[in-house]
Image (cartoon, rainbow, N blue to C red; front, side):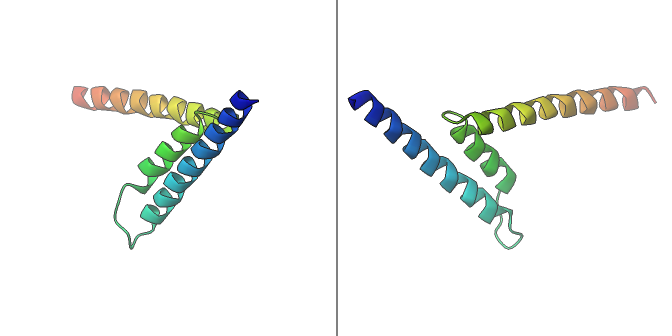
Length: 83
């Protein structure tokens, strides 16, 4: 019983912290407020992915897209140096 309460408390804590971080990222994304909004949103998703499946899937997809973008950028850079 006590483990279930602790587990539920952890889930609620992670949901609150992750949600607040995502909201902060959204606020930072508004042009009037300077800051790294997208990175903060990604950080919030990473926090939520500690406990919830759907954000874990989103983070995995974003990581895969980031790897693709890195490979594409490196290949473009090495290709342009030959010209």
